[in-house]
Length: 423
Image 1 (cartoon, rainbow, N blue to C red):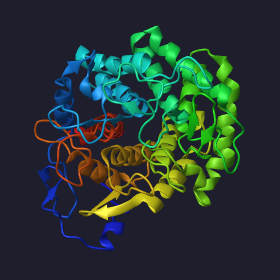
Image 2: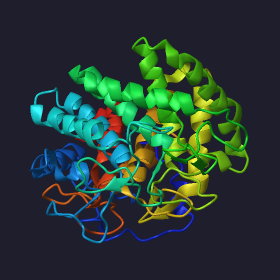
Image 3: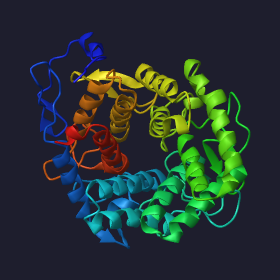
Image 4: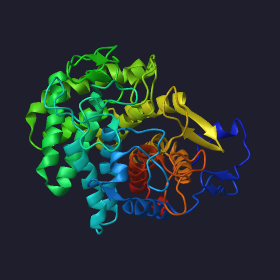
């Protein structure tokens, strides 16, 4: 296995850790971090743990709360909730796991449907204002439905995040394709139509949508929203289904990405700011946005961008330059300028995108880094399958997007690139 770029680790030698996350650390004779258990076993334990999650109010608890402990109980210190990202990435994760398992266990598909049903029934703005019946970015646990003023974390009570409607809409479209349940298609269409209606001309200083907007008035907060890849995915997927109304906004969005956002990688990075619901600091660039655009380029390749290799490499290089550091002899990736910890969602995203780049290009430049980053990430999974939100310390539960919903699909993307890593 190629481990180039691990020379970064040798610049400051660190003795191998005795423990990472919830397990004794296992290294080979060359100091390469190995899995604590085969990946297949780790993710099967994790999914089985979630399949036992108590169902209340019509949904498993982790579907309607972000902060849950290792006994499926709410963490009392934080009642905030991120429905669009958490359940949107969760739908993607469970659909991929369902396919990987040969679609043999109906409980897995049902878990995706629980998340889709919550988004459709419980997590929308009122049918009024500039962003009507649009998926909420934040809210509060145990709300059925979320109230009109449910904005939480760093959202104001009546704010939504337009890019989160793209995540939820795209995930619901995938769920529609699997189930043919038209409710999921209709919500995806609604999110996309609201996005198209509120789209503005992107420039060198602002994205086509602000990071946050008051759903009643449309007044924005935060000129640049770095995560544009899921709005693009949503438009592209609806066009595949014959909804040509989205061709023009899709083309305008792609033109902004290629004319302004991608060139900004080599400048100040200001167009890669803001993704995470609990942050609003100015100048807060994130690793999530460039890595997820790189993922889409690697999936679509020439069908999306004739320069996909160059652009994917530039996105990865930007991430490596700004968000990585060495822990326990492993190059890990942090979330954002204001949080460099290797939370499960971002670290698994990083490993998956590096693996996909390796597979798509035939270059082994990042292969070893991908393998070790994902090994590190899976040290967060306990023996019984309950994951911690990150592997940099031991524990159980926490932020469910990082512990599980935005992690599982990344591991499966890496396995799709290199099936032998599962064993």
